[in-house]
Image 1 (cartoon, rainbow, N blue to C red):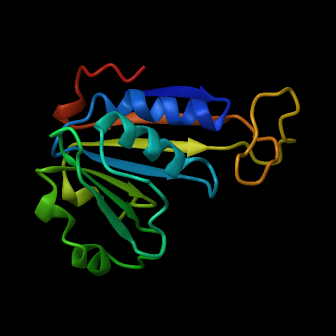
Image 2 (tube, rainbow, N blue to C red):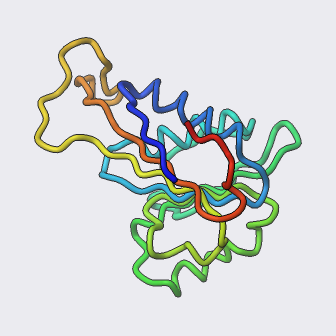
Length: 169
């Protein structure tokens, strides 16, 4: 079962990440997919805030993976960007499964690469409309570019027994 959420601004994307983050526990795998600039790292910042980990949370595109220790005695956040990884062997070299039981692992661009880490996972697909004109109704602005942002849609799907009965709405 999946749920869909409209995220009008980067702040709403962060807040949504916080709501999801409050439901996470050590051993959880979150798989993020979607368009470039759809808000995967923004979502992860909210998730990290809910987990109470050390920041700042930035895209790990060039370092591939970052570990954020908990400041509140909770699980470590392992934030991975698999965009530049080309094979399962490269993913395996990261040893993500070694810390999987003690950490919350979030993988951007991991579809088709990391599902084997855990049978249970939360899949979040962030989409921005293609061909749509930028928002001019004050719905939000991209804080980095200063340009209006289009609303995003997040489709969330829990896979496995861990997510059975968890309210993702």
